[in-house]
Length: 189
Image (cartoon, rainbow, N blue to C red):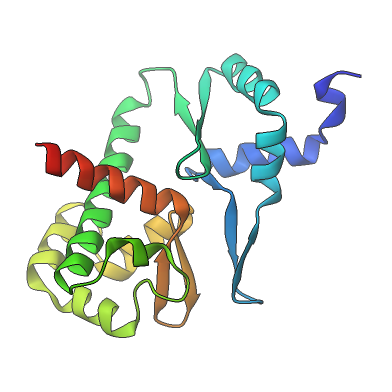
């Protein structure tokens, strides 16, 4: 029995749709009904059949990348056609994460708390971010016309941020990993 026979086409298609939507596939996803992180079956499938999916996406002209530290998968396009769009998306994500990280650090809190469902950003934080003119200008310059809410939606749609209630959100393991990488790069510059 080949690996193809072990994986349901519906599951492969669900993974493909996630990647096509520009999402990362994280180990744990937020379950808003239970208000807790739960194991992501798509992540588990990718993890358990990594060589299969790496070969599969290679045949589609992409590279399946596994980030162990942040516990997530993402697709890297092999073709140059999409690099400009990919670069813009990456830039927009970086800008939002840097603003959130900068705000959080300036408030005297450890950036690690951004990745915790019981901490993260609360209503007051979101209001402060939205009320800061400098942050607003930067966010609008990255073409988020509706400001902070639209920027947070952008991260949410890519599984880089989870909403844990009305006026509350926190970074996924992938979002926190990318923020920590940006901070590391900044500190080394």
